[in-house]
Image 1: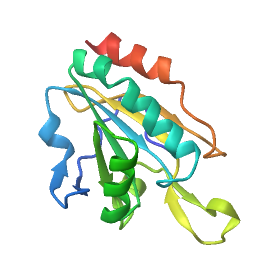
Image 2: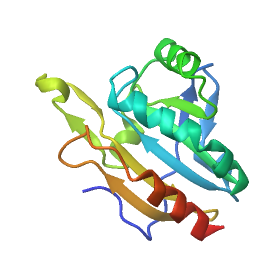
Image 3: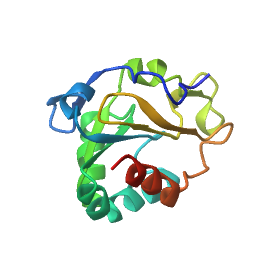
Image 4: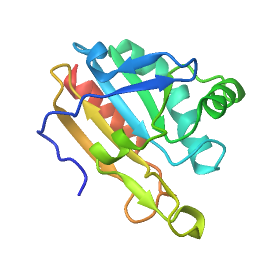
Length: 158
């Protein structure tokens, strides 16, 4: 079962597209939107990152950080960022530790038995590290989050 609102967000350290370690705790004092997605260049994921990109001015005004998390490797993260001119950080959870810690592992993407990825999920972590919003696309990772709702929650944490 996915993590619930009101619990402490599990800290983590993952690599970004430049192979730089990034940790959740480095954003203490800011609201953080954790956007898990199954994989780069997969249609719905492309729409999701572009929606987040297009809202970054508002997230920046709200002192919020957006982190995209997938199992993709560094070359895919770099290319995904470049192709869509992304203005937020993508992180590689290649060993699926964070995906498991947040309990959003999805098995069988594309009908491939045993293939595991991050399910589409959004967590909003407040400046004190507590989860204030949790949404998971169960059972269908093709469903997108309600982007207006995500922004509204971030606004409410102002």
